[in-house]
Image (cartoon, rainbow over all chains, first blue to last red; front, side, top):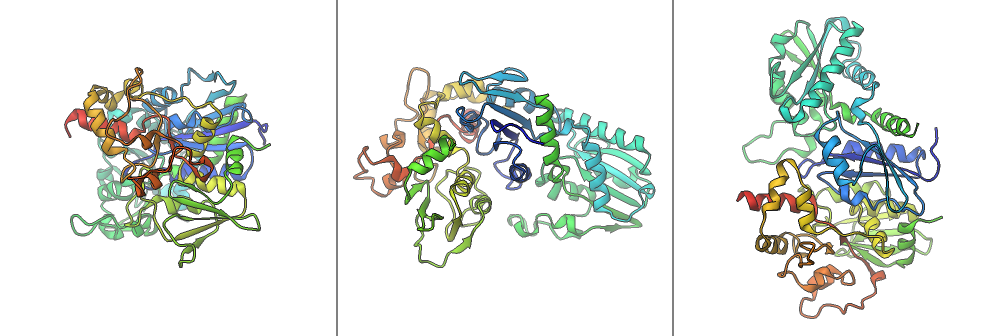
Length: 278
Length: 225
């Protein structure tokens, strides 16, 4: 697989002014793709971090880069992919020709790729190795507010696809802020084993602290913030994923990192760029 | 064929500074990067992968996350050894994301600046209200938020509005001059270096458009937070 030497890849993502791990998966996917030398250049840009989406307009030298494929590292189509990214990058559709001659191709977000289902299944298997799927409930956690309506739709779509495979005893969508609530997982599930996969693009406050608290595993994992006012335990970030399984009553709960941290995202980003070229 | 960024780096004969980083070249053609406040002989923690710059740039000396990489709070105590120009370029892009490309575009006469009012008027959603900020409030906010001393080391190229109003009358004129090293200007406020200081000695961190952090601050001012 190779692009011509005049093609660049730009991965755009949300980023954060408070969460140091928000941009980490995007940077890691970019580094992985860069090593494969498919594109002449691979860059990243963020809404809330640097380089900004506006900076990205200048990232690629028009004398050496003729074509830029823009892949949104977002879990679904929505406000950011449909409004913010095109506006900030001065895109006027799927294909934009710049005054300097560069062609910018706006691709589908990674979350729209059909291989997302395989990644979710793979992550669920990795977090609970050897646990029979037929005796396991799989929970896919999304945010679930009006603002993130499309991410909830994408999570539902993935759950339906996995349910249709008939592998797991149950496949459920749960949300942080609307029913069915993740905090009701004991009532919602019947199986002894429960696998929980956050449907987010990166780990952060939600996956490190909020969802564990709603699941009731925060204290058990030892990542509680401790005394009020004390800073978050930087060394403990991610520790919550290394204490599996959590035995709660007669249940075994397996908690996975956000799906967006999966290295397989790099392949999906490449495929989204390829799809825009064809 | 080297692109515009590589040509800029090649022409900036080491040693040169980029923000708070001092870049030297060894006889073997390798590059050594340290914090410009650190003594090269000091017992510095050695890194040898350009990707290490991501972690070095992530937290300040006190361990706080650095949401603005051009803030003057790059941590001390490290030495990054890089094999070639490609690694140097990658590391510098992790330290100051996008700034090399913006500098190269400026050098090539291709950089387009956007007035703050243009950026504000473009906002939607929760940031739409930020456009209601007054000129006087902008004057005060930019003076505080963007100042090189504790705020941001970028050189401001954007204007307040399409009429060409200055971003803040409360900032020194050096803040808007790409020929001035913002850190040297801070150290010698009484006698800033002349504007003819060669750019090659310091690659300036150019700001062609207000960042999202400043827009968020404009919103806070309007909302009275």
